[in-house]
Image (cartoon, rainbow, N blue to C red; front, side, top):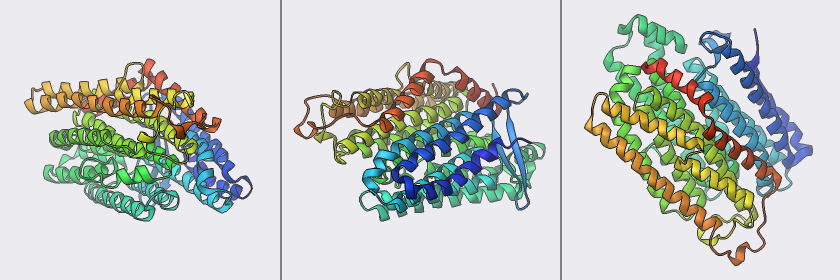
Length: 501
């Protein structure tokens, strides 16, 4: 038996101890250790993905016995591979970005660096485990592991009233997780297993195990819990303050990697186990997604605080993910999961760029006090431009193909069979992209163009530990915009396995 994927879980766990111990001598440079350790899961996942290519099902799985739940499984397939690679890359790059940024937050205290980087490694463990999990209880375990380290990272190093903000974040997301757990427990009890594949097989063989009414209730509960995680309108109260007041490296992880995992879980769990029930409720979800898209974008338009603008932008982008899923088409599902990736690279770029500006600008976040920074920070400005174009869905960026596919899915669902409601939702979804372009271009103009202000006279380009992550993510954003086929083909194939051709 190969131990590739269990290694991808164990290394971040061991890495938490390694970074804790090494911080006493390395201090802020412990971030380089965290980055190197994060490359190990990335390599393991790449090898596992290559192994999967040689199997008829294109799936690589490791299964371990765990008596309370039956099996502890880890899986790389067409759906999880692109998501896992995105998370691993972002974790490694943001660890490097943390080196100069957390230096100005922590100073010379080695104990604080030890705590920060050990929590950071546990945070990455939770995200990777959640995506790899093949058992519902295992999934919930890792889902909660994501929550605890992120709570402490915000509470310890956030801005503003960080105690209240972190507690709000914890309460909202934990309540969502508990509602999700209700759906998991009911599913496991009635289906006779918590192994995802076994649940699907049992319900396919004997549909009467769970009645239609109960299926709808379980889907409603699971989606409610996951909608909290992806901050859909009405369940988003935790997001604006958590994103804007978290330390910027953690804001970058929250926005680019963690939040969208809720969308992945909808596909992996809800749509795979209960496809017909999800389809029944999908018109409601489509309308909900549309409201989220418009509300988040409209709120972003009126912000002066650049981190709060990105927070509401992230909420809007999560609406795009749900919009594609609600189409219940293979293109919509593929577009939504590719939207996870395009949003991840774009938000990673933009939050790191904001961190660079804050670092060079004495912590300033007000766009009205900036201007003319393009000439002083050319690499940061170029990367921010690329990230903004990806958010807008501009051709040659990965955002173009993700939005094209998810809107295509929306129109396919609206016309086959024809639904006036679905047509209106699809058309308005396209209109929402104008608001995205509006706040993105507005922010670029205020920050990087126009006359330079006196306050920015001494501003210079950020150090390499910030520009390197920006350059790498920009290359990935453009690369996937020019050649998205390896990712999209996998996601479309998985979507077809759920909804058919």
